[in-house]
Image (tube, rainbow over all chains, first blue to last red; front, side, top):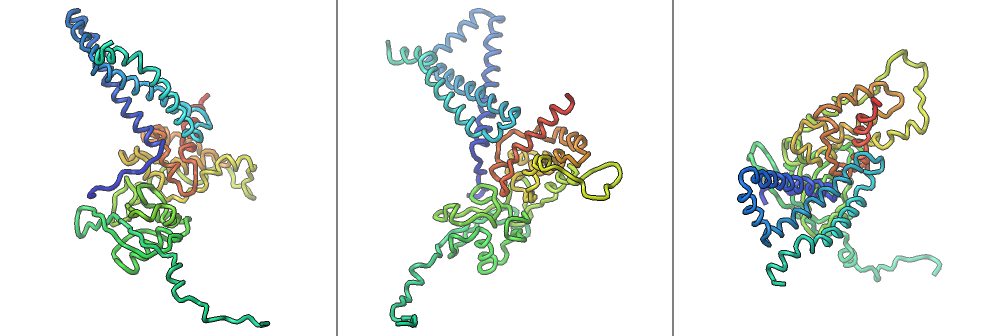
Length: 126
Length: 256
């Protein structure tokens, strides 16, 4: 191993890394989203063509990833706000992170059918 | 049998060896010598050591018995001087406060210099930028008016307000655990903010406003991303992130 090792940070560091990564992913989504919405100004047919590709199972999977990224970023964002403004926030940051992850899992399970239901019917038949 | 006798027959000479507390531990140390090579390399050392000893004892054994060129800082060796902060198994710790048994001696123990500061040799880094940031927050009592003829009195509650941040030993474990500081050494870093906090919230001090203004800079407290690496790294158990957040909140609320 020629390089130095990775710093072994704990929950706080990894939640920060995840917050950054999801934030960048959401930015790229918004970039694409603005582009595809702007297409309607070019031609409504082109817009329909592009949006039709979004109904494929692969894009549905990406959408589920988008839900995951946005939910984490939003919930962890609330935690960061609490760390910033609540005087006891820094002391309870780990508990708040586990709460965030718990709510995240529940919401991700809840999003399974609405987001992936159509794709599953498409792939496996109804 | 009124007199206790030492029965030499019963003594087992092997027992001393069988019950030996010593175990074999591998130290994997990040070596760097600019006079030999521009690249840092890993070097393994095998030691017989009591797991109840500290990582610093292991480094001493290596330096004194195996390889005298191994370079590291240490002074008091009892967790007060703050000289031997280093990255042990990937985390910033004081070598003199880390017991071998607490860091899984079954695997090689990696020892690296702290991150974010220029490595001079082996485990020794250039601490000048770190101490410059410390000096920049004016870490001393500032008062105006006449000197009192007796001590400056302070209530127990007022003293309690900044008690946590008085414990800092300036070892740089917090500052060099901060991802923001690794990325940009211009950031004041947790240690400087902790020492500013110690005076900002001191009822006897009168330069709190000045220090807040220094930390309101673009390289000041606002760069903190609350990763809590500093709080986890502090060998004195200071709630570093909490102190930084208190300075941030003081900046937000002071004008209202």
